[in-house]
Length: 289
Image 1 (tube, rainbow, N blue to C red):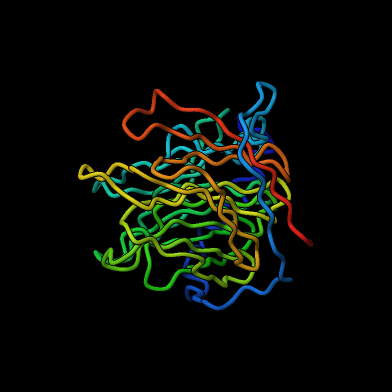
Image 2 (image 1 turned 60 degrees about the vertical axis):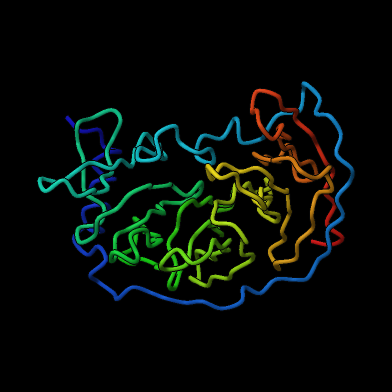
């Protein structure tokens, strides 16, 4: 028998699935996200202490899932990708304690679901066309509406902010012309490009616990094999202002992760060997909130 909690979840999800993306036309908005200006001060890197760890280690909904197509959600729910009879990818919401399942988007092929850390929303990518195979979609499970916030771009990687207000998106322009870092307001659907890479690669992204700052690893040079040879660490505030961490040049600086709201840790790798690396920490101080 189904638990009462899962029955309630199914009743809500059934209403959502019945309406799905068909109740309202997709919402497209792209404009500046307004926020109070702030400046950032970043200290000199120092070796990380053994006691300094990422705050995300204890928050499963904020971590990247081990399987990109099977994302654990709240209250024992799981968003997974399974092929339909024609082998097209579909997103299903299932309970980890029962065999029940329900398809989330009835009219779209979907991949890479990511649950919001607060509330009942899922970000995913949907197939629109050959030029737009990974269109970013945000689905509210308790309301029959979806957002498609990126115009003429594909979403390759995305991270929810801890307060679920924003998505940081590493994307590519339609046709793969450039790699772009986007900031998406998930309430309004507004989006803004924060940065564009001079190389065709992906950003690594991490939100501060208070959702005010976004740290990224920004590739600047690739090897002939397209592996990252050099990358810098940058920090953005919600207003879009950027500060760069000063490190010795010619190294891949990867995997940014926040210890708390004022300490950022990252990994400095040797150019030709990931096995030779060290974890460094910098103090980050916004002048105003």
